Length: 244
Length: 204
Image (cartoon, rainbow over all chains, first blue to last red; front, top):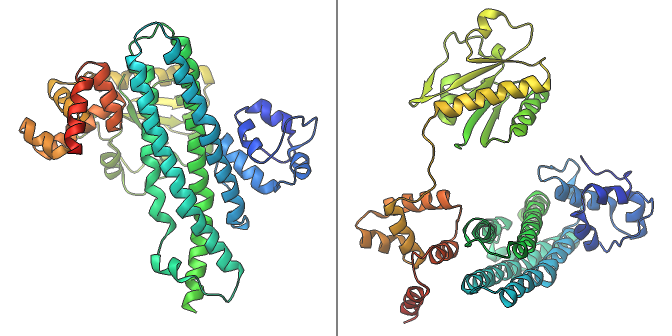
């Protein structure tokens, strides 16, 4: 079901509590009372249409934006995407690390297998961090520079950007390995770890991994569905202006 | 259980969604391709998708008097999505007929039967255990050897190595090299010490 502006925010959360992380990224706090999505957004000074696109892509992985996405400035989207990066690196990943360390510290049986798991996760963390850094250092600044250039009509693009001939499509394929590693980690725990006595402890780790995966998928989805079309449009507009 | 490939050909979006919902309620593994119309001709479509089951609105097949029973030597079942207006002659050509006016429970029961039959028809059950060859390839991959090195060591072509790797990934559900390494250690195919030796060798 599509989330509409007239729904009560409280009902939205009842419908899908995973959205709590998402609304936090907009700075929205609990205690909605009977306020609708529209009212809550107004109170927190959040762009309603943008909010709806984001929660809907999160709520329904098959959601396809119907509205005009071009109306959102790239900078607005990037602010959100940066918040999600922050969430992974500062909240989610440390939580999982703590959970794995707890397991190692508290299990009675030999912890060899768990060290393998820890190393694997460390590896994954490094890759995710690299991936995030690349986006923050190359992709987002590129999109922001395009936006800036278009806003200051008449100015020519900085030479560096034109020369690099960098296109937003150069980074698309990168998502794959980060996703595969997470997938493998889940499968190793679910299928291949020798049946642990304290399986319950693994539940919370798995739960966190599934959450992280869902969030990452949505992050990629937003980039593909919203950010890339916006950047493509800016690219062609810049090319058009240069041609003139 | 083997994953069935289902091809759904039906003009109406609502009917297509309905069929998909019913199928998803059965909880059997399948993959689905859908078409609104037969734009490219039946046999071309079938040989491209290679479905086990074709669920189709008979009206769309009215120009065909015979439907293929096998595609590339694999059996294919035709299921007609019929309403009252479809005449007997047309519906008689199908292996199964689903009446779109039936209630939910009976539709589910019929679909369950059809999937059961098609699963049986495609008989061979996919095994998830690795063959001896695949196990040797897995060991090498886990130790960090490249496809070329593995080919040389096992006297097989790089292409064959790649095929083995694809099968290993499909069978185990593990995609990355480091994931396969963990699997190999957990299953005592390689020892942690061996791993360190190869890693050190790379450093030199």
